Image 1 (tube, rainbow, N blue to C red):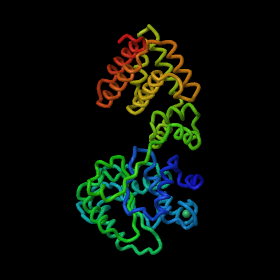
Image 2 (cartoon, rainbow, N blue to C red):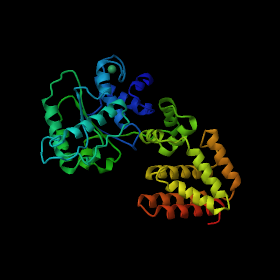
Image 3 (spheres, rainbow, N blue to C red):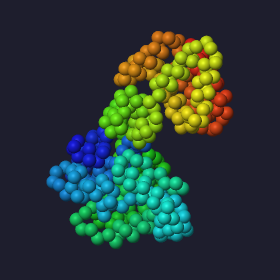
Image 4 (cartoon, rainbow, N blue to C red):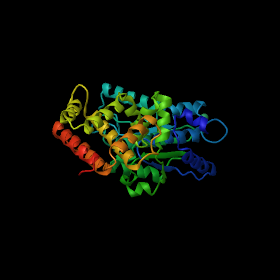
Length: 374
Ligand SMILES: [Zn+2]
């Protein structure tokens, strides 16, 4: 199985897949399923894998990943595969979800789908697309009832299914109540509670568990060529979300450790000017933006968390050294309060407060927490 999962670029989740495999072989795999779990754990990738398992042309368990059917599913272009996701509303049409969408927008959507097929953890996010509306479900209905493809199992994947509005969910419910033959519905979502009870009661609910940061780190080293330190930091900041970890990995993070060191040095110094210098750097429009500041603050939180629990979390020696040094220099450090203060600042920055003031306040508070004098 492991080898074939590579073709699907799936990380971890072997136990989840094994339990589905058993279910499919037993013939008790129903026609409607919800795959729920935190973002970036691979719900969409697993849905594509299930679609391939149900249609694989090779003998044996699961999906081989190399037969024509598997290849087409990996490329999300199999004729038995029907994808539903939120689209921008550009017309009042009740039947055609793409009505009124301009050529340029269509190109964008196609580019996004190409990225999804290249890497199933890619998050489909189309500008102006907030919900899944009735035209999408009506079109799906037309497609699946008209389809004539003997020998295949049609698979409908609804990405971020919680985005269905009430009308769309009701229309889907009618389909689920009288499903066409050999058709399987897979709804992926981070928020199963937002789906109507009527839909949930028709589906088998499967939880897709979080990925360990070690798995995410190893993938970043292997596929993104990160060094172990950067990979660990990205993986742990992303907290089991592979998509987010890749996003962090694509930022320029070569200087992260230096930045943290610089911050700690200035906090250690009695010289207030060095604190102001740190603030200046963080406010510099050329160097930083909202996102990079949030990342920097997340990294500081990670550091204080490690200081709080002591050794044994991190595996990268550079990072361990940093934590040890902090522990040695500041035995009184109140990490819990430091983390609270940073969280508060992160929140404030999202609300667009005065940047310089918020960061200056943060550093002065951190100086106190480091020395346990709150
Ligand atoms: Zn196959």
